[in-house]
Image 1: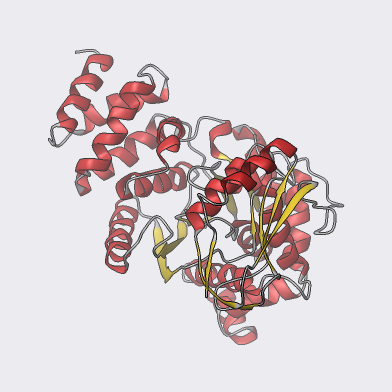
Image 2: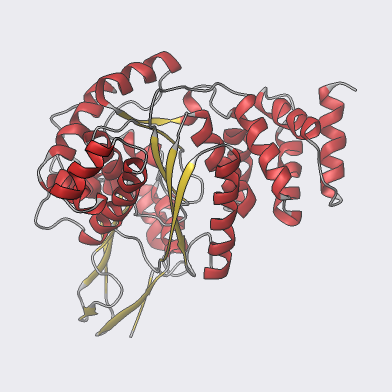
Length: 424
C-alpha cells in the first residue's frame, strides 16, 4: 500500500478510536509534511486526536515521526530551551529568558511559533525587533556567534507537519493536550535540545483549566522526554491574568525590553515569571556542568535563580539580547521608547468605583485580533489595571491600539459582546 492510502486508512482507523502503529503515523506525518494530504483530511486527523486522544506509545510515535519528516539541528554539549504552553496573551517571557541563558554561557537556540490561540506568538513578537526566518546554516552561524537565537520554526523544515496542523486548528482556537505535548517536544528534539523547562499555567482563562489536568500533562511531558533522553522540568502555576500589561506583538515586546532595560516602571510580575523559568533552566543545566562551574555559581549566587537575577540586573541580558538582534539582522538601537503601538487609540473608562475581579483573557484575544494583531504588529491592548487593583469611576481600565481606524471602530463596536474586565 502506498503512503497516501496508508495515511487515509490510518485516519479512518483513528476516527473510530483505534490505535495506530508507527508506519501508519509516519505515513500521515509524511503526507502532511509534504502537503499532499490537504486541509480537510489534516483537519480530520487533528479532530480525531482531540476527541479520542492518543496512547503514550502513539504520542512517542507522533513525536518521532514529526521530527523525522523534517530537518534536525545538532549542537554540541548542553543545549537549553524553554517553552510556555501558551494561551495567555501578554506573557512574553522568551524574550527575557533566552538572553539570560545565553549570557550565562549556555546554548539556547529557540524555535518559536507564530500566533495560534493568542494575538501574537513569540515569533510574531521577535519579528518586531529582527528577522525570524532563517535557514539551517544561518541558525548555526547565529548561535555560534551569540549562544542563542529566537526564530520561527516554520521558516525552514523543522517538524513541518506541526505547522500545517497548527494552521488547520487555528480557526477553532483549540489544541488537544496530546497535540500540545507532541508539538512542543517535536520542535525541541528537532532543534537538538538536551535540557528543557516547560512553563505550564492552568486556570479558567488558559488552555489547561484544572490543576489535575496540568499534573497529568506534566507526567506526559516527563515520560516523553525520558524516551528521547531529554532532561526536563515542568513548572505548574495558577494563572488568572496576563503576566504583563501589553497584549499584541509591539506591546508585548516593549514589556520584555522594559524588563531587560530594568526600567523602574517595568512589569515586575513578568520579570519574576521569567526569572523563575531562567533559574530553573540554569539549575537543570548546572546539574550536568563541570564541578568547577557548579561550585563557582553556588559560592557566588547560591542558586540558578539568583544567578539569573544577577545577569538581568547587571545589564548582561540586555547586552546579549542586542547581540542576538544584531545577528538576526535587527536594529540594535531600539529601546522601549522607540517601540510605539498603533497611532489610533481608544481608552475604556470605569463606569463605577470598585475592584478588578477578573480579566477575560479569551475576550482580550478576540479584541486584539479585531484590532489587527498579529498581522498589524502595532495593534493590541494595554491593561491599565490588573486583578485586585482598586478603580475609581472615570479611570482608564484598558487602552485599544490599532494602525487602522476601521479596525479600531470595529473593536469598539465589539466591546459589548466581549467584555474584558469584571469589577465591583
